[in-house]
Amino acid sequence: MSHVSRPSTADSSESDSELDGQNAAGADHIFIPGPGASKGELLETFKMLQVQMQKLQEENRTIKEENKTLHAEKPKQKWRTDAHDKLSVHEDIISIYAHKYGMMIEMFPSSDLLNKRLPDSPTPFDSTEQYTTASTQESAFLDELYRHFPESLHKVMESSYFSDLVMKSIPDAHANEIKKLWGVAGDIFDLPSKYFTNTSYDRANVPEIQQLLGVTSSTNLTVFGNWQLLARILKASLCGITSLHHTSSGGGAHTNSMKWSVRQVTPGSIAWAAVLAIFLLSPDTEFLSTGIGKRSTISYKDLFFTYKKVLVTKWKMKRIVQIVSNINNYIFKAARPSALDSAVHEDFTDVIDRALAALDMESSDDGSETAADITGPGTPTAAAALERHVNESISQPSLSTQWQHTTETLPGPTVNNVATNDGTAADLEDAATPHVVGAAAISSSGEVLQEAANDPSSTRGRSKKSKNRGRKAATPVMASDRTTQQTHK
Image (cartoon, rainbow, N blue to C red):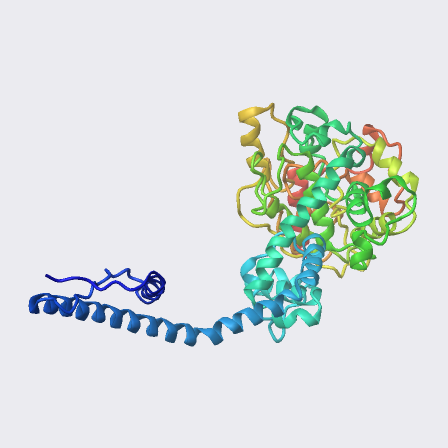
């Protein structure tokens, strides 16, 4: 009769621990027969030991292969860790510059372009030629990107770490700025604050807001004339919300203008303010990184593209120079009470078809400036999108302006193609006017713009009737005649 030899309790525990550590697969414990065991029992035990040995050898080979793999990958993992640590050192400065970039330069940057190398001879970002082709747009985008971020970051700008951080920082910054603006939107638009402090308020059914979001007259043919409205938005964001109630630019050490050393506005920042003005008035409660309104389906991304394009192509024209000067003075110097008062007393039906025209944009005195092709992207328009939303849930406001070169009312955000060296102010107004929801809030009538070029405070106290005096909106026939004359010049 066979028997099993049993070690002491301590020895047994140690043996079990060793076996458990060596045999990860949990092989069965084999009992060794005693001296009196039969030959058959010994052979059976021997076979079991052989099987266990083979299992252990196989496990050992597997472990060795895993160790080889880990050893081979160790340098690569270390390099990745070191690279991430090296990039993370720049995280704070990248975030700061990304916040500034999203507000002053590009509201909706392309993540694909953020990783691209700067061309040897890029298209200048402030050149009208940048909109000639997709290639020149990309080149100018990179030129502006690399000029904005400091040279110390250029070596990391082709990494996915950089683009991921920028694409995360910009929406976060937008959310923070919008949260601040909600609290002072009543002061910005001269409307009851309850419309905005409660983001769920049914703004779509407020008549005053419907007027701001829609253009109700074919005479509203200009954009950007109500520069005071855009200046308030920019001042609140750059110098702090309390600066709206002071006569000086103010701004403490922690304001964006001080952190970024900003002393003047850019085409991107004016377009940014125009888009946020429309968002604040819209039914939307969240500004999505996709650039499309969740409730209104307004394409804020297309609006920004169109507004910035118009500003860049006409940045040196007399009217735009005057408006930019007024905005800079309002934000960064002592604000003129008359300028603020004029916006308060104006009819807001013409108001947000006034801050991006003086894109009324009369050509310069010597007629040397050329209005470029400024057709916006051909995606679903803001006017059509909001109209669908309105039809489903609210009474419909007027959502588009009359297109001067046709008898039809066309939706935006596309603007007319103009190629003229000395076109009239009205021609350039039409070319610059994005036919989109919100145009009424950021634009003005032609006469106010005409006079504003000479006297920024001349709009004060004007009645609705006086706005139509001096220059009437051209009829489609008149527009056609002007275009024909320019063609033969």
